[in-house]
Length: 321
Ligand SMILES: [Zn+2]
Image 1: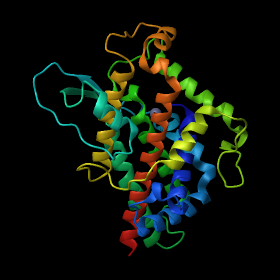
Image 2: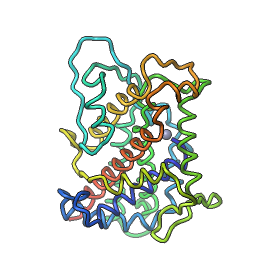
Image 3: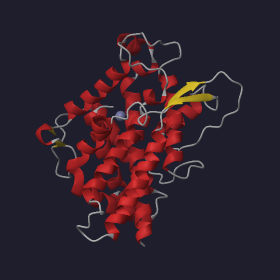
């Protein structure tokens, strides 16, 4: 994913949290406790002080850390061995998980992880955010070891980048598709065009212009972003990690598994690395239904970011008490 796609996804995660905090639609929040909704309210209020840093933070891993070949990926290859494997579970609202649980022939089949540590990176950043909150609370204002709200907000947006990347199927697939034909790049370019055409961006100041509610200001009607917004405005929120998952690492490991399955579902095994974008459009499941599957990826990523952020925040506020 590219710069403004990442930033928009992070913004939509804040919007999703605001919906969880405020909606009266029982379909969305049935089963969500009052405590979770109260903390979502507090977290959104906190985020609103730092919205000018969303683009910078969400793009920081690509721009500065440059750990794309390790931490933005978990590269899977199907393994031709006879071994029983059980895949993790995710909340039933995760659309890629639900679809692949029914449709993937590779489900519960062995695989090899060739490369990447995206889940580890997400777990580590989550801990560092909680630690920094505790230090900010404990130390005197201006104390040289204390961090700042700005810094912590940047870390949240940085974290959103890794979570979103893990939802990009090609980040969890050892087939590269980023050679000279660069289908990977062409897909991400299409996504970036959706966002940059749909919103007014204040490029001089590296931020979006805002609507009266403080979210990116739409420039014109866009089917793709409207579909994603509608999905995340109506999808039921499940705060739990799903299955036996107990932390960010477990959850993100599961995300990477289903992202891998999704990649093989969207682009068949016999579609080669040397084929063109036109062939991708005509011959692959993804190419023929590009917007539908891309909207699933964006919506699941937004929902996952909101869930992880809220768990982090609640870990900190539980410590406060
Ligand atoms: Zn990335």
